Length: 108
Image 1 (tube, rainbow, N blue to C red):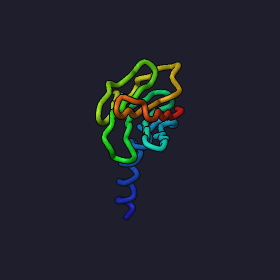
Image 2: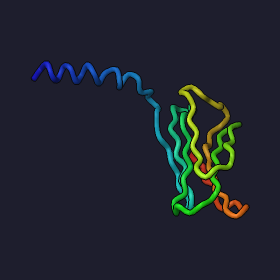
Image 3: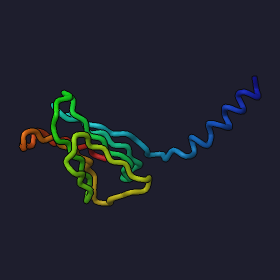
Image 4: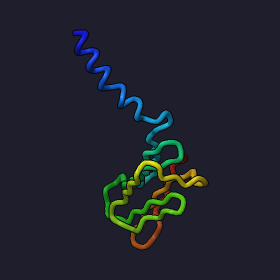
């Protein structure tokens, strides 16, 4: 039993050491759109924008100087270490029939 516990501890320690202290996933939802982001402090790794109602529309994601093209599903992933120092908001938006329906932002 001690060997199993020691083995589990040895396997878990590198995983804990690899996780930054301020790593997190933040999300915010409006009436039509949810925006989710994985980040380490201001280092954003992922932005995902989804509709809540599942109806067709054009989604976009933006953060600092990054603006996604308008697509049916907005998601973008960076290598860990991408930072835009002055950017505190990660946002997503929904357009339908050429009109902006909703923009939702997450503070990081």
